[in-house]
Image (cartoon, rainbow, N blue to C red; front, side, top):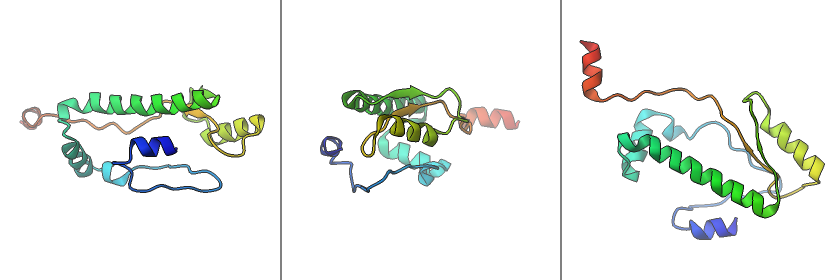
Length: 130
């Protein structure tokens, strides 16, 4: 964690620590609405036509960093083929099997169902109205 913070110190505004675990669920509310996402993309200098590749690149970077750390620590990386599988139960099971009481337990990956948003150019939208 210290290495990550050092490498990203210009973007880190604070840290959380605790004796147990942190599970982030739900959404980043500002990015869950169109105006918030448009503001974020504008600040990042990302054009709408670049959105797909931008998101894929960021997702892949996050996945690679997570997996790299798990490999360094000798922790398992598991793909869960169903979104119905409880990640929390799987992680608790691995922690119990391996006697892990602190630190990284595992990295779990899955494909989760997401709400589809469609973006169209203004000209395309105008044609559909007529």
